[in-house]
Image (cartoon, rainbow, N blue to C red):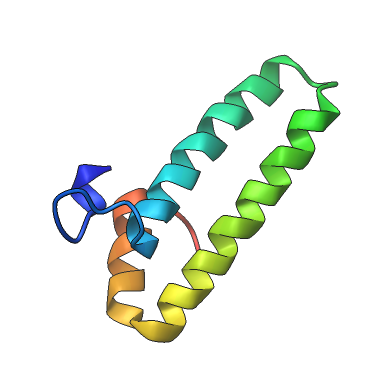
Length: 78
């Protein structure tokens, strides 16, 4: 996550938060592929996806260049 930080120890910038959420989403997606009936975790996944979407919308509204770079670096489609 250090590669997305604006400064050393940065944990609050939208880029870092989106990167952390993306990793958690990826891990939970792998879990759900093996445990298809884990509906409680599926709901948590949907919450995380919504949080990431909100952060990405905020970043796009505030600084479109940073948004585009982040999307490209994380390999997200939008």
